Length: 372
Image: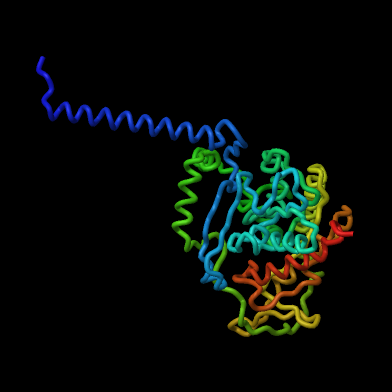
């Protein structure tokens, strides 16, 4: 049998070295996954689509001239500062107007509430559990699929910012929505199409590191349903006929009735969670309210359309009626706080200026719950 040549010996030794190093690398990766991942220790989120261990830097200069901001969701998928999930005073829920993905950590309206309380010498822990696209369907599912997975999670109050996403659900109820608790696409809580990938995303420490590094490299990132188009600088005018909210309520009765069922169920879930519900209404920036008059945006053809105002006000009316009936804490923000140019960076989401307004307003409403 011929001995291998010197070249062959070098190749064999090199292959052995590569194999040993690869083995050590894989072993190290496995140890890292077992220690830092959620495969064995920690909450295994399975195929839940709530982002966790997520850090991203966004360049929002094109949205409102804000430069770069930091967006973080922690190991529980929550946003904000707190010592323990068991010590949360106010947990805020809602859709993208609660999540505020393009607003810095210290500038969301949830963070502003906490800041205002801290300034009084009475710190209050406010934690943000908003999820883009969620309506009350997803809000309810949170108490079934997400919040029970967070060890020791408690809150004294759960504040739900309601209206905008449910208005879309209500308008499409006849065509897409068979029942009050059937999930729509935006309320999807688990990934049924890519379960293996979602399982990896939720539980792999190395994948989380890769995703965050990639996200920070791609700092100039603007996606989801956010845009750079706002209503600032529009011409505003009163319509020929005043808005008819009562007619809109009759038109949307079926969807509003289903919404009412969800509001009642949400209050029940919040109380079963050990907290008291706070229901808050909201505005869209597609109209203006000045001196008690509702002004609509003048379209290119000269028309003034207030249908979005009518729909949202019909939803807000039902929200407050149910809120009073279930004896929750009711804050009719849409009846008291009005916005102007610069308060929104697109056709739905508040800028830091608008979030500041909301946070200070809500602090004023919530102050008596904590400061006697």
